[in-house]
Each structure stands twice: as C-alpha cells, then as structure tokens.
Image (tube, rainbow, N blue to C red; front, top):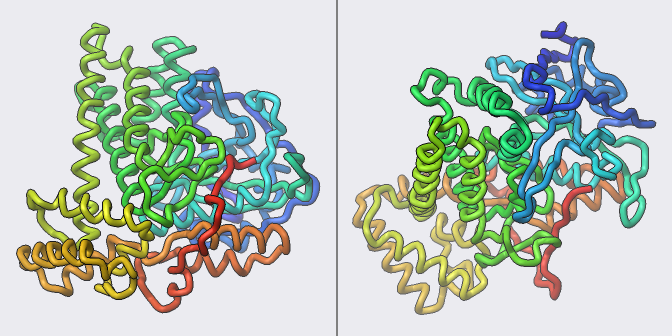
Amino acid sequence: MTEERVSGWNLDHTYTQLPKMFFDLQQPVPVNAPEIVVLNDRLAASLGLDAEALKEDVKVFAGNEVPDGTFPLAQAYAGHQFGNFTMLGDGRAVLIGEHLTPKGELVDIQLKGAGRTKYSRGGDGRAALGPMLREYIMSEAMHGLGIPTTRSLTVTSTGDAIIREKKLQGAILTRVAASHIRVGTFQYAAQWGELEDLRQLADYAINRHYPAIKQDENPYHSLLKEVIKRQTALITKWQLVGFIHGVMNTDNMTISGETIDYGPCAFMDTYHPETVFSSIDHQGRYAYMNQPYICGWNLARFAEALIPLLHMDEKKAIQIAQDEISHFSTLYQQQWYEGMRAKLGLFQEEEEDKTLIDHLLGLMQKHAADYTNTFRALTHDKIKEEMWFQLDEFQQWYKRWQDRLERQGQSKEAVYELMKKSNPAVIPRNHRVEEALDAAVDNGDYHVMERLLAVLQNPFAHNQEQEEYYLPPSPTAEPYQTYCGT
C-alpha cells in the first residue's frame, strides 16, 4: 500500500500482479488548465475520502500527477462489438490504482479521457465535457435506483479543446468501479494468452469478487454460475425501470455485475419494446426488448472463454458451459415476472399473473403509454390521470388487477408500500438530461444539473419536489438519439 494522502487515498495496485499481457504501464497525458467542475461529495464520503481535501487534488484528477508509489496502467481486453470480435483495450482510460475503502472493499480509480495509450487505435485518447457529464448523471441516477453501477467521483475540465465534428471542451471523468474486468478481458486471455494466463485472470477475479467460492470443488464452474446470477439480476433491473444501455458489447459487461460505459444509453419514455436510442444501432441489436437475449449471448461468450478451465475433458467442459447458459432464460423470466408483480403490488405468485402483466404491457404499447408514469399512476391509484385509463379495455384489466389484489389478502397500505418502492417516481428523462448538459456545457451553469441530481438521489420518494420532473418530453417529429461518447 502507498502512504495515505491527506485527502484519504489508500491506493494499491493488485492488477499489476497479473501477467504483463493484461496491461500496459501508462502515465496519463497532462492537460493545460484543469478545473474540477463536479465533485461527488456523497461518493467521496463513502470511500473514506475528504471532499474538501480532494479539491486540492485537481492535478491527480486531470492526470497531471499521480499519487506516489502508484503504477498507472491501461488494461487490455477484447470484445464482440455489434457481434464482431476484435482486439480492444483502454484507448483513453488509465487505471490510477485500487482504493481500499473503510469497509475493506477494493475499488478501481480510473481516469477516463486521460490521453492516448497503446490501445488508442488512432484516437486522441481524450473525452468531451458533455459525454463525461452525461455519464456522471446517468451513473448517479442508476445508483439512486439501486442498480449496480460504476460511479463518478469527479468531472474535470482540461482547458484543452478536442476536435470531433467541431471543437469541443475536453474533460476527464474519475470513474469508480468494483473493477474493470470484463467478459472481453476473459475473451482476450482465451484468444491470445496461454492456459496459465487465463487461470491467473480467473483466480484474480474470484479473489476480488467471489472469494466465497475459492474452496469450491471447481471454483471456475462456480465463477461461471456467479457471473450468470449477477448479470441476470442486473439486466432484470434494467428492464424493470426501462433503461436501455445502447451498446451491450462483451467489452461492456463486467464480471462484477455492475453497469459500465454510459455511452448511447437512455431511459424509455413511451413504452415500446423495439425502442433504440443509439445512433449507430441501425438493426436494433441492442433494443430494449433484445437486452435479455444479448445478456445471454454475452454470457455464452464468457462461458466459451472459460472452457479450458471448466474440465480437462473438452467435451465435458463444453457440456458444463452449455448446461449453465441454458438456465439463463428461465432465471431471467423468473426474476422479471417477480419484479413486475412487485410493481403491481402482488406479494405471491399466481398462475394468471403472467397473463395479467403481459396484457398491461400490451395495452401500454398499443396506446403509446409512458412507461414510468403508468406505474406511478397505478401506485397512487390515479386512474383518471391518463386518458387511455378511461377506455373499456383498460377498465377491464383494472378490474382483474383489483380482484387479484383482493385475493392476496394484504392491506392497501402494504400494497402501496410495495409498489412505491418498486416504481420510481422519476427517472433521468432524456430532455431533462439534455437541458442540464446544455446549461453546463454552453453556459457553464451547473445549477440545472445539481437540481436534477438532487431529485434523482431518491427516485422512490414520490414527493412534491419531484413533480415537475414527472413530465415526459413534448412530442417531436424526430426520435431521440444518443451517441457514443467522445
């Protein structure tokens, strides 16, 4: 461990214990005029860091200097990007080290936008202020929703312009993650490493994320099971709140089960299973309805990478991998309907619940209902709030739902509390996010963003302060699009 700094850093560098093929030692590239524009006080406190002292660490957050005794590095990995396998790596990110929190947890501290690395592939290694602020907002919103996610400690403007289609303000995001080990990291090891390299990576992942399985008869088989469990739980949570990641490549799926890489992501307003926000996803590969399927596909790629470790007999190893992956769909369906029952205040399972849930979603799609506001209105029993609630077909569904609630025997108060904690009143509406980004990037006004973040801290509060954030955007001729951050 390095000596603890005044601000509270307690940094280690365990990733450097892996074979050299997994990383390249890389100093961040200095910038001209760094300034911290956003600092996450709450996250800092949870990490055991002094937020006031951190303000003096601007050179660290800019990459102009690194804490003594640390070994910054860029990680190597591969990935299937829109189904095409390729060699990748941290082309604009540098891992400063792993910070030990007061709870004894080790978390990565990474600078995103810190300049060119060995893996930049012609890029400049930099990032723009808008996309970095967007990741800050979205990751904090996900945290508020109780969804596992990487988080953002700071956004630091660099004082340097970056060139894309036009000149943009440069920025660096300080990202905090359980780790940055990806499915693509294992694919990289399986494709270009030796068996011992793959084994060391798997052992490292187990030690870091799943230490309870170290003594299992076959810890690598257990690792596969645990990653499937965590990713299934994650994707279910995404679906239940209408979150669309937008770029579910295998290099964007972590072994820890955290949401990572907020590029062309957004939350669905109008419910439609085919919703796509990414400007480059022309075929809808990563549409809302496809996210569970892609999760299963990515997990299958993880299982393939592990085959040499699962059993000495390749046929038996393949069978183990196939058996575990075959459970994904059933596991997801169970968790999805369990979550949907909670959104409707249902405590126990009945045979007709699936039909009840599917019928409601069908009506929502047919009438272009707002996903979040539909469940918020049902939570508060405000059936006069939406025009389509007055239609006979909804009224028939509503009666079936009320009959179902009465059969289970729980009090109205208990039903309300279950629905309230299962249905967020607010999400980071796309037009609200854009409003905050425009104010910050164009005018240097961060008050709009601060207000939005304050509302998103507790999306299940259902209080008066959140009311102005309920409204969906005004209808437009053009669908909302997001872009891979630059």
